[in-house]
Length: 214
Ligand code: B12
Image 1: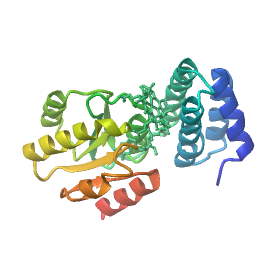
Image 2: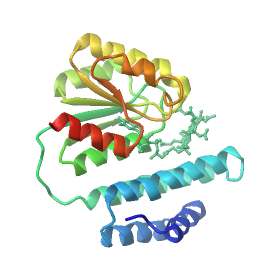
Image 3: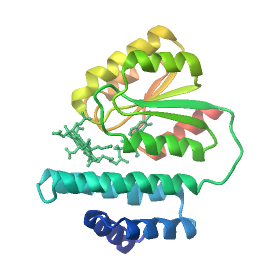
């Protein structure tokens, strides 16, 4: 079921006003009405932040307004994550990071939370992670899957450096990549690496999870 446009617009205007109380009540209302988590992520969280980006791009809102919207969205992600029922574990783990110099952390945090909803044990390492430190963590945790986020196209070289390092360390490592950075130019290059997949949407991610569970 789709979220009515009026609810989205109510949320967006509250987000732009910095009115986190109303944002909380909209999100809690959707959770209480049992809207699908993926729908809330797509039609409230991502859609509103894309709009924030457009308004910021056109100088119709300030950098400070965008920062406030980001902070409120972080809180909304926590509220959604806390609604997760205790469910069966699929016994798999993922570690997700942003490439070095990448400061867009909402998308990969949302993905880490989405994996938890799917019964995975997920760890989000955060923004701007030094590759050597990440490699060390991966060596310790030995996750089934690694997720890498790259939203700013300028950081795409850092993405390929990290893929190379991880593949050198473990050629069989399964890796998924996401974020807007590689979207228009580098998806073909990514697909040349064995066991490395670029996933642009939550639907693509869900299909991938079905594929690897068979
Ligand atoms: C908030 C924001 C910021 C904040 C981030 C704060 C934070 N703590 O996260 C700050 C202020 C730091 C920032 C800085 C910059 N930003 Co900015 N930012 C945004 C904005 C408005 C929202 C990002 C967001 O949270 N989106 C919502 C989330 C849910 O979507 P998402 O990140 O795309 O994630 C989804 C998918 O991509 C995918 N995904 C993401 N990661 C992963 C990982 C895996 C493993 C998988 C499977 C999937 C996946 O799944 C998510 C759910 O579908 C976007 C606008 C937009 N269109 O998104 C611009 C945007 C991303 N920023 C942009 C730019 C240019 C910048 C700056 C260069 C601006 C500047 N001149 O300084 C810097 C670069 C900073 C850096 N080095 O990283 C551009 C990037 C263009 C590009 N592709 O390169 C955008 C698109 C804005 C625009 N219209 O031009 N930004």
